Image (cartoon, rainbow, N blue to C red; front, top):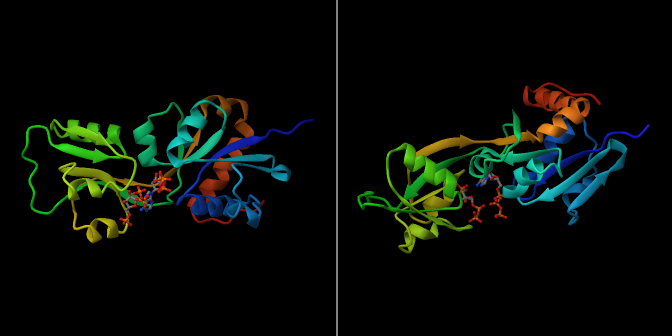
Length: 215
Ligand SMILES: Nc1ncnc2c1ncn2[C@@H]1O[C@H](COP(=O)(O)OP(=O)(O)OP(=O)(O)O)[C@@H](O)[C@H]1O
Ligand SMILES: O=P(O)(O)OC[C@H]1O[C@H](OP(=O)(O)OP(=O)(O)O)[C@H](O)[C@@H]1O
């Protein structure tokens, strides 16, 4: 009998280590080399698992297309990408928040203020919900630069410690929402591989609740 292989899309970058630790706590025996490898596909044959290591923003795309059965993605990415996947668990890791920020003492008084962000969809729906018309400028990083050099009136970005804002002389003007990482599942995989995915969800739930998991 062949066993079911589960493909997991993991975000490279700052979520990765916490996500790997969470899976280990859930009873999955991931080797120490896991963190040091430059491989983008890692097979853990004895556990019937295949990991694909993706850019954080791309994880929901792999899961939506079914090339990964499950994945781990920040809520910020889920809101921005709006992919057709099930968001099954709030893992509670990589906590941060999304906020609007800008130079201190500058009011948003122009007709269509410019908002720079790596999250154009999130930024646009947030300002729409506030009844404000804005012009969104999409950037790919170093977002805090935008108000400092006059590219934008405000930014919409992730804040964690607040250090990047502070060291660049910016202040948070509005909090949009708290962000944590989510466990996501492809809807077809959830039917076809229900047993193995339910088992993983159950184990992760126990870790979230602080209970011990035995393999
Ligand atoms: N400063 C932060 N502190 C905590 N979590 C963060 C922080 N910045 C981002 N995150 C969370 O971690 C996820 C991935 O962040 P990371 O910086 O690794 O990726 P990225 O910025 O998309 O990648 P890259 O820098 O390669 O473009 C984000 O989607 C968010 O959920
Ligand atoms: O509140 P802090 O703890 O300072 O963290 C917030 C910073 O972290 C993220 O940037 P990242 O390091 O991912 O760099 P980039 O988006 O500019 O590439 C985010 O875009 C902020 O710039």
